[in-house]
Image (cartoon, rainbow, N blue to C red; front, side):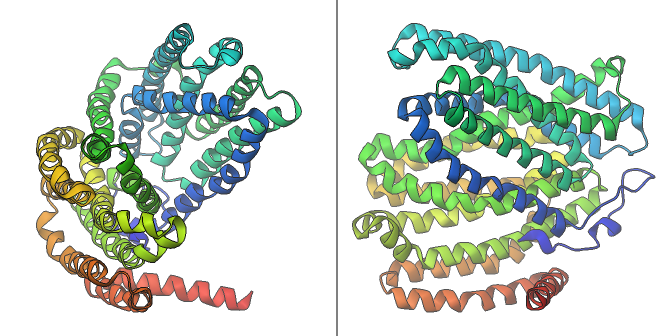
Length: 509
């Protein structure tokens, strides 16, 4: 991925301060973030069956709906997480007073919005209970008893995210991931222990989950105070708060519009083709989207580095990240395209694959385009121009709706997938143009884009020949690595050096 941007990037990029900040190479930060994203997955896999077995389907369903509701209301952080990271990354580490002003101003707004969110969840919960339609009658008493604890979950989540953002601004991703992964695992395992050994009722499990989150938040706050203190309530500044809200407000607009853009095609499939067609589109889309964990790990490492860099260096770094990730992640997507038919057939059966594989292959291209948008996206954020992204997202809605309206009824799932590619292309092209990296990156992305088009055509024509697809997949990576060496020789050299070191260590072990 873009991890091989360059090991000496920290040394080469000038800071916006006199005091240089300690920096690991971006490839190290990427690896740490990737491990942090993957580490909780086995815990979820192991604990979910235990949850369902001891709680029952109904209780677990209610618990899932609570977390979904919290996820929807997470926009109440008003985009302060990236706003705070951007502001803190721009400041010198020894400028304690100004850093404290940013921190306490951001936290004050977070606390206010967290309280509003808690009240909102409590009110929504009472309305749902009063309706008598959404919660099984036998569970109403448990949910009502747990409502005050449910209301505390959103504030705890918002404040926890704020503390992690402060640590990420220092590019201390090891510490941020240790705290975040520890909190996630502790918050997942503790309620399971309660369900197994104490009580399986929601009135016991939800308070346990809230207390676990509170303990994790307390630990994170102590860590933030240790690295950023002293911090006083008097450090709050209204001007700084307005500045953070101005930045975060546009991030919130994008946060609200983006889920709509990402789900409009699935909604169109259900509306125009019937709900029976939705699984053939949404299931492969959901699975393919999981690979974005890779680009997510890169973008998380990239944003504070871009924010703390001079404009020219930030532009160069974002361009290299875009091209490197585009080529290497493109290789992964190309493999997925070639193997789509055998994978779907083995997993879900030949009948499902026959209806889904063509649209799924096209969707892989859409997801590749959307995934590499992170580079211009965070470059614009680092320049404090999230407003441009929000306006671009709004501008995409009419042509995307029109494309879905024209293509889906006529071409079914394939038409919806083509519309998705169209929308993703508008988004990537628009953000590259707005960030000023379109000219320097477009020609460098053309070879990998052409390769993806070629393997898509091959799969559509001969995807049923499984042996051929496997052989082509095996021969694909030498081509991808040659493209990478051609477009980014320094990054290629670093990647091969890392791989050789890993190979030597594995042989020594």
